Image 1 (cartoon, rainbow, N blue to C red):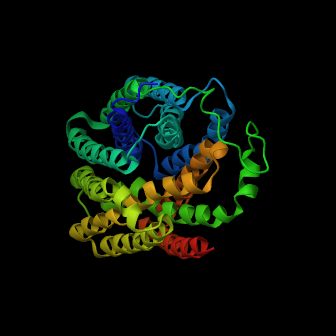
Image 2 (tube, rainbow, N blue to C red):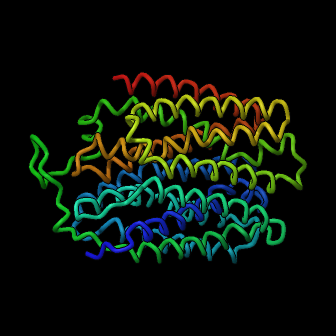
Image 3 (cartoon, rainbow, N blue to C red):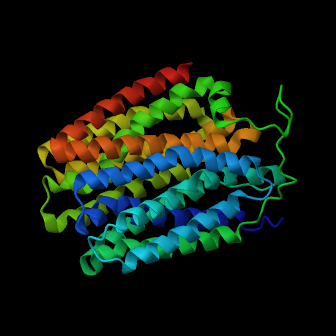
Length: 397
């Protein structure tokens, strides 16, 4: 197996993936609202995407764990190819067509379902002498997200809604190509080490996973609550900004906000390996949860006051919240889950984000439409604070 330039290749995959996320999920509300769909319908669509992620993510991880033919690399390439096809279809569909909704659902599911495999790849190579600096590579992905968000925000003025499917197609193909450059881990050589009380070839089911790793359930639930508010803010950022920013400046302001979030992530992610030498991953997760809630409270204050500078200031706290939790939870899962269950474990922790997104889409979409924007945001902030308390309690266990 050729491990030459492994970090560079893995960084390219992260860059492509985050370009895809910034151009699709980041502007989903803008796209769907401008092609003729109401906020409630958009919330339903995003709920379906998140619900699919909840079930399909762990199932896909379980399939890869058990299969001798389907690898992480193959799964990512296939999902990206399907995403590119869906993006191409969106380019030719007229605005208002009901067909847009199922195609968007397929595209967004394909965009998110391979992330657990991408995380798992970082550690799979270690058994063969390879070394990947996950924080550095993921940080470069955040830089790509920053550039992508700004670019999409600027291109929207000239290209309009066609910006999103174009970015989806280009980023999907780039990610598929970068993944194909990664060396394949031989399945026969990748058999996990024996686990106490269980034959090496034996693989537990998803339900058995929660029984075996009961101590992780509270941490997973805490992540759901934190990601709930995170997704309320990011999915409906256009709606939040629309309450105090002129309509013509919403996409530009949103692009700048997403750019700030992504850029401030870089120092934390680049230096995460060094941070782990000084602090345990549990302490990092606890501190990140606290800063997450502080960020969400500040977003609420900024929207209430109608202050764009204060909103940007809230985005800066991404450095100490999301930027620490994202690599932290990957290392946490790698430490706490046996090798035989790694893909399921990574998928289940990623699924916490999907569940949070599902709740955010459902509550945010319909509450924003029926009651107004601020009530949905208030619910999110309360959930975030509850998630922080649960995280602190769960980590102490």
